[in-house]
Length: 318
Image 1 (cartoon, one colour):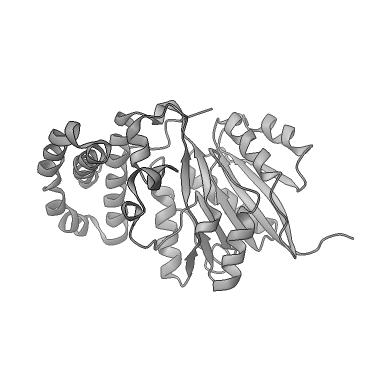
Image 2 (tube, rainbow, N blue to C red):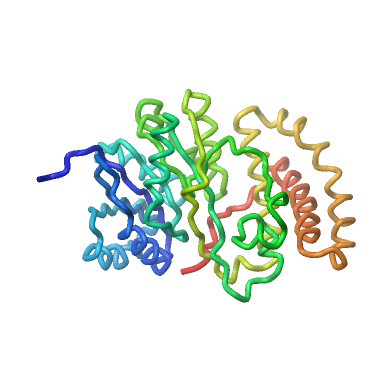
């Protein structure tokens, strides 16, 4: 008998990473069913040439659920994610999960997210993303909370972070109410920069959406060699800070951004180099702290002067 339950779609945006996409689709084929729900996969290919199609077609034969495929020719992660939202609405999906094409999940991933959603009534449920690091990863990579060895190396207390307020599109399950009834879309003004998903969930919350988080739906992210360099890590912190400034300017105006960020950025130009000076004697955590202080301050200044890097112009991995 045909299952006529509500539809839960797993939305995946991809751009020229067919091997990583194939690995993710293999993991999707092992997802545990959810009682009363139909599962489906939605791929939005942001490459006008349709480079993801061979991986999608290869996965169809082993996928126990439908795979929907669309090409979004307008370049940019916000364009691709908005296409996911539109396709989900056209398919009458009640729930939409987002995961990145360089990640993969355990079979009970959706079950854990959906269970938390049922328990809390939240409009969106997020969880963690950890790095799937190679055996020869540099020591500093394990000094980040994204490493699966972080707690083992640095202790549980070191892993304490501020409570999360907003989920992220790298691991989230949301109700269609957010992009249907509330009409929230990803802001195209972010272009190829990052930050569009945080902005999305900030505006959704302001419109009445509620969020919850669970540690039981963590997923893993492939980390290619190009992202295992301190140069990349430093540039990442610069980019994050510049995007935060841009977000503030878009929401509250440029003068507000200058007032809020300028004097906060000054100390990092002093503390960053000072911390880096002692880092050779103090270990990887100190090294990263110094880079974060300095990179954050540089990023703020770049953002205040309108220089925001195109985070998604470069594709890492294949």
